[in-house]
Image (tube, rainbow, N blue to C red):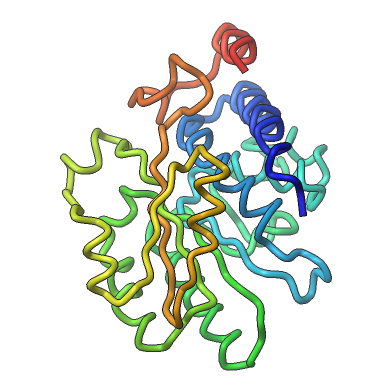
Length: 263
């Protein structure tokens, strides 16, 4: 496993990769991708078992519009060839703007319609339990995504099945496509809701690897676990941070140079 002190450097490099991909492709959702980089890095370098591949743990990015973050992490982790990144979001390219599980190694679920990946992950985790497998499932969901009814259907059912090999992580940046998540459809008190549904709950600064480590190490005690990871949309690039427009704005050449200079 990677030393935790080496992870901030990886985060900067992966954020640079995301900026370059967004610029080359003319793709939106750059801030959504920057938001969850540190969470994905911690999962892929500290938690996820990937060898042997046939017995790997499963990671699902349910907020599929942040695909650039997952593609970049998979490339830097050596799971996919970095050359694939140049074909992102292009006609006849290699990697689609929203996840397609047939596009590349490590894309476990087709995602983009919010609320779906979470429940697919629960089904996979339940299957592993039935097989008496020790494989685990991790799933990242957006805070705006928790407004989907399908999330709460799964949240109600999972504890009944004792799915303690499943960990959900909420990318809690309080900013979705049209404004503040809490103002659009208030989901607070978030921790108490998950606890009332029978989940083990931990909280973390989603940009602190030490905090993430503590949260991931909380015992599920026979229950599914959710980590509420407080993050900043657009993290790492000051003029994108907590700024709604970067859910959609395009990274021009000028913006690319400003962002890369900061990183």
